[in-house]
Image 1 (cartoon, rainbow, N blue to C red):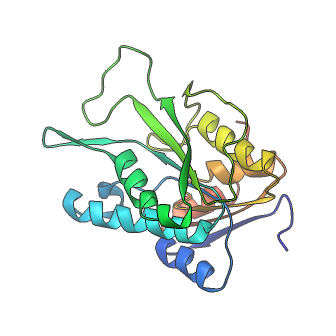
Image 2: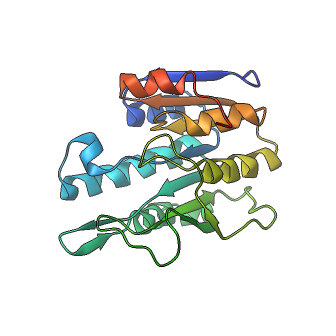
Length: 215
């Protein structure tokens, strides 16, 4: 039994962490944002295979529970590499067992009319779930992402929207592979939910263990 308001942060490989928990029969809702190619030290083509594997591992950990992904597309050699498309494609592989898209929202990283060389000025917040999951009440389809602890981090508003979705479904615990500095964990604790995360960066793990919300 998870203790409400608890926080557990593990230093290690998030894919192994996800699959290890699932192998032990531990499943639960997931909120996460898998890293970019440069953050794991591989080329973009290699990263695409890795990213799909990361999404799949998160879906395995979630099981029949919701999995919510915060992803920002990238531009590479004149083309857009769509993380959102990959999330939807990987979740679609489980359609035969009832996996479905619960909702797909846009988080604005910058104001309307602005530009960015390396990525679009918006991110995606995509929730998928199994047969027993529900989309919940209507929430904004487009919103400002909110404060971040580092440039590529999940915005506080995005994390809150995702955590509140789980809270309304009655969940008391959330998993966050690739937890970074711990925004999701901090938001979950602030909303009286327990949270567990994993990251391979010791500095991020240290921050994730103590980060508080709101800032």
